[in-house]
Length: 191
Image (tube, rainbow, N blue to C red; front, side, top):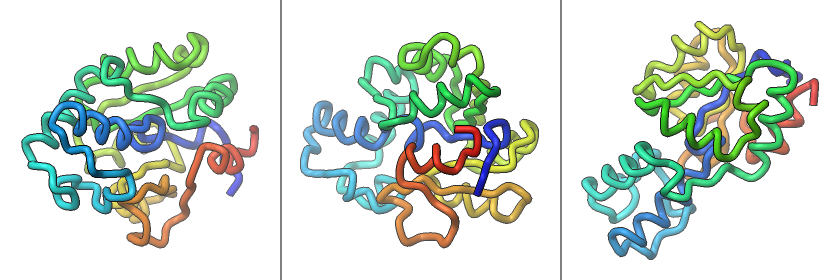
């Protein structure tokens, strides 16, 4: 695949942001659930695969969603560099299922250069199952997401999904996939 920078969009959590690691650290710090690793998360619905009560899971994701900076949420290795390079060429579109844009915008402003942030278009859908509409509105032909269900929905349209490999999606699809931002960079013809 040779993808032009203006044709591709990105999910935030699990693709640009290392949300799984932050969730596990906070689960240990806040509730004493310290025996889990990222590889233990075998399902996107964390409460279905870890022995962490659903109310703890909901509280932790709420904390991350409301204040990503103060939770210590970090970018995935290579994400800042690749997105910054893309933003020099065209607008970068990030479409997240989060309902709030401000905590994400603050997080992006903290980790990404000002020039990059000026060329990021951020869309908060509030719904994992409603990304297709926004991807089409932004005229994207490709979209990278870690949620298999989202990618399978996109595969039924004229959008090409690319799964960002995470333990919760391995072996659950036959779609194109990437494991890191170097592989994403290799897909982009301008980089």
